[in-house]
Length: 252
Image: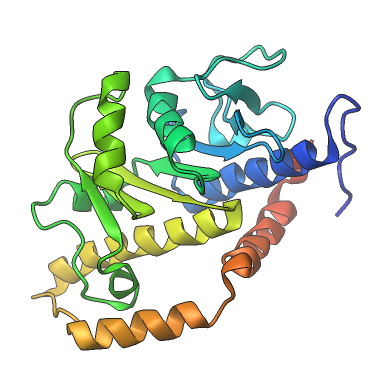
């Protein structure tokens, strides 16, 4: 597949980040993890600590391309020309993590059916299968305070996140963050699948909890399989090839 030419005004690093993020939006659309024109995947621009890329508000994820992503600062102000606005209700939440969590280079927030369903249960995500077992003890929770447009909620988000990088926003949805986009992608895949399977399990019968001793072995062995710097790289690359065959316009 031919690679789109980088616009002269952009560095190679920013263009590569734009293509990677645009691909991720297309993958989410392909997998049905989009929500009309809402929700966000944001990515730090390499070498620019306070510059981020985010989806142009008003476009469906299937319309996102490398060139129409919006570059913003930590406060959500646009850096450079773009005809598209940024959804404040979304970036207020992302900005607090980008600002206060040093390794939060990529942040994903969604409103999928499975994610919102589990977020709306009192017990939240329970370790009853392969995927939720990986997340036992790894997920933070934040109580719903309404649409995220008030900056003062940020302190509570950070406090509730603690040292976790997976968060269930109660009555709201899922949020993950990671040092790289491929790692954030595979982390999101794990928690989304865990929510889907938990919904199916409850419909099938009484959930069977995985013993704590087995969870410890499970987490140890799975996370030893891939070096941290390679987390998500192969999985993300596989889906990039799929969307390239469907519609490579995300590269432009």
